[in-house]
Length: 129
Image (cartoon, rainbow, N blue to C red; front, side, top):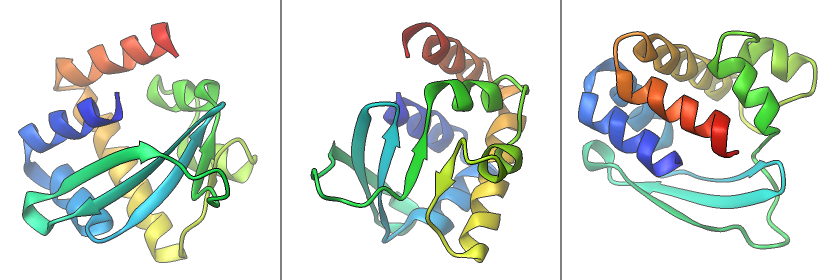
């Protein structure tokens, strides 16, 4: 689903995609959602390519969450800030990167209002995760 999200945002282009390029290009992260752990590698500037692989067992998580916490953000029942402050979501990043991440999350949620594909993806996440 993550790659599908990336492709929807790439297809839309615009400010959200530009922000993702600025934040992610040349970086990697280990993400844990519930019991699933993946490693992301982003390269390529404007032609951003994201590789997803299984996280190494000893890799330190850069992002941790539960499916429930993500669902609450997707459907407007919580905010990223509240979830981070309450410990429901953990993000290992500099303060500047946290602000950029917050901006991208807000943009993606705003894009959901005008792009049915994003709403469909959130509904699929809600059913399948």
